[in-house]
Length: 269
Image (cartoon, rainbow, N blue to C red; front, top):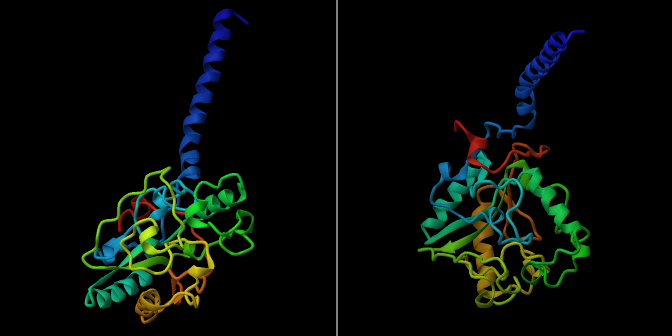
């Protein structure tokens, strides 16, 4: 083969490879693209902009100690019936001088997977002093604090509290700052403009059980205020967490979604 012919052959091979790569690129892009939310999902802010949102997993102030996988925008996404039911509950609370505040709504499966990886890493105890002071990390799965699936991923579950109006601002968490136990007196816990519910949000402790008999007086009245407002609109409380409610009937009782918490997931709505 002449030198010219060899050069032409190499050029032909390179050209063919480039064409194949170009043709394959769209397929690869499609394969790695994030899923979008089904049409039944909405941004809560579009349904009721008066409900306060403090999406903890989009920040470092949570039991993991960092932004959680899948939380790209600090927003609440829910199935439309759940969002409308929250709006109705909010209307009743506003008349009494209160507002709902959501901490978490729809949660992608990739976030749940992040929780599982964190729980399996027994060396990571950075946030223990606030979120699970009295629980050994080896017990998180057995005691039900962490699981491989979450009802949040089905889209009709929400974590929330009640705030007295006018709402005071809540200062941002500073990574590395000294932590205080989530079950301590309200004045000693991390500041939150929520009513005193007896513990902070995501407190891995039996004191967070909604009907724990140690919770009395004003704290009991505040928990009852939240539960009564939501149960009247079809929400069912998880007894182990005063902040956790699921709207019934669920639109997707057996489906665990994994689209990101992001405005792009709802593009066009």
